[in-house]
Image (cartoon, rainbow, N blue to C red; front, side, top):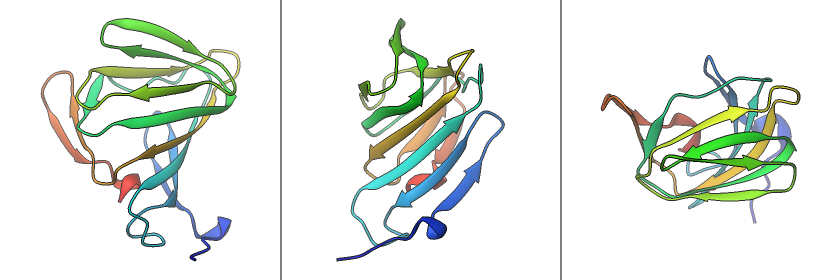
Length: 125
């Protein structure tokens, strides 16, 4: 059994959100990755794809997730499964922002809608 203490989580900040790695191959040796996403009110990530499935569960606040051309509204306690390779974008609710837990296989590669490859999402490894 491996215990990863709260103070050991790894923070990665982008212009749209902060990701806190809770477990990954390089943090505890897990074969899956788990991280917490914190997005301020109205923040939005760019349209992109990830080449691995992700599972998002909203802890606080909410978001609108654009997935495959359709919008899905998420509230506290909701979970969404984002298929690998499908175009997505996430916008935190205007009033509440978003705090979510995400699980995925580590090492997912991100590609912007423009086709620009962004490489491995660092919070997953």
